[in-house]
Length: 153
Image 1: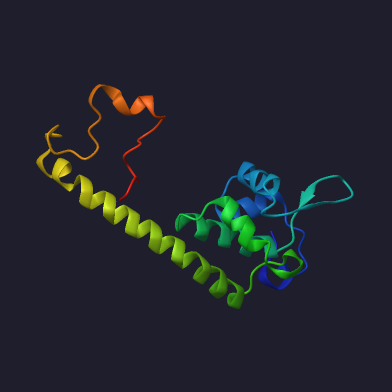
Image 2: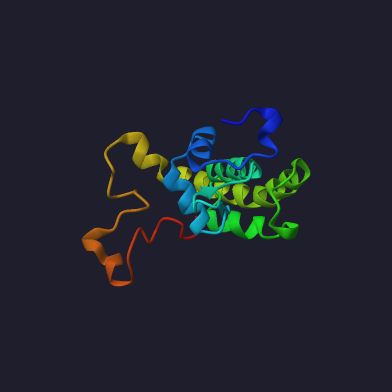
């Protein structure tokens, strides 16, 4: 296990990166398959990572906690020169770009909360005033899913 002085030169194993990042090795492989991180193979054909992968994984995890999709993370990270790992300044810029989307999601969730408050508050799921009531599944004729949720909310 590399210490901080050797971390710059380290060729990190998947097990070390997974433990240090608090993700499973399979998650590393998944991130790699999605183009979010990259590894290289040593002479024994074993997967290795450079230390900057730790920061990249931290950015991915932080973004996911904010509700940013992996596809959005990939698109945003691809804007960095030479696919480099984000610096502190990069993170400030990246996070600002996501703030508008987060604000939109928050506003959406507030609208949903306000629309269904009566149903949740009384506990009876009143069919007279519930905004998501779907008698006889009439909405099934126009498509799949919860069609009313998100519509004009």
